[in-house]
Amino acid sequence: MYFDVSGKRAFASTGGKAFDNDKPAVIFLQGSGLDHTFWGLHSRFFAFRNYAVLVPDLPGHTNSNGPLLQSIEDIGDWINGVVEALDINSISVVAHSQGCLNALEFVSRHPAKVRSVSFIASGLATPVNPAIIDAAENDPDAAVAMMISWGFGQIGHKHQGRIPGNSMAVTGSKVMGRNPKGLAADLKACDAYKNGQQAAARISCPQQVILAGNDRMAPRKAGMELVNHLASPELHVVDGSGHMLPIECPDECRLLLRNFIFANNPSS
Image (cartoon, rainbow, N blue to C red; front, side):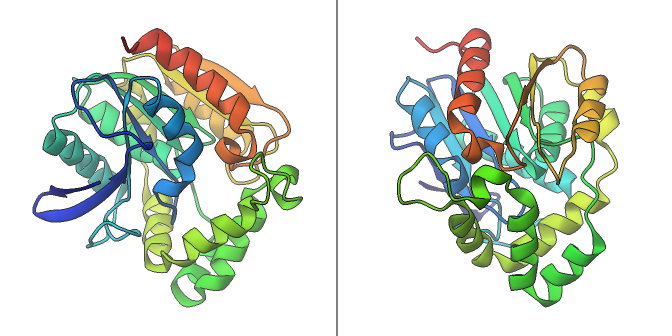
């Protein structure tokens, strides 16, 4: 669906159900250069279980108008603008990769309506290899190839996805490929972000951290730094998955999210 945030047109998918802000909400936040399609399986699961689901494209990504946002802090405030524009209440935030940094800022600065937050495959910070940033600015195809190569584990590289006939790596390449400027801006914003420790310390709602056992982009050490700076997170490690855990191991991820969100933000 389309809506306006600060006078700019924005887009979000709703999991195949009409958005109803009277219901408890699940807002999904994706990683660098990606869009609403990343959360297709998970968003439908919650939408068909009486939740209001929102998966926004960030400004300048796929269906949302620009300009691109240049910092994680600005993205956190933009997410709050979405919440205010749509009058969303009782929110569970589910975030992956860069989305976790965005969630740290949003949840820590605008906590009143947040009932839970789930961080997947990230840490307090996401330093980015300078070669990827350079490629994203000057050779986007090379940058996308690097992201796909490092982002997927064995399941993704062998095209062993849970959807028959679908290649996760090819789909990821296509999505990032249509957001080259967005990818570059996102990576630079991640690399510059330094407020994770302070933001994590201010989060008081229930927290969940799901890490990937074979993550080459956000190694377990980085994920444990996030765990150690949150108040009392539930920690889960999905062995065998690479960084793109929500689509490499969707069943395991969905079960963990279901149990946590049903417990902390139940729908009728």
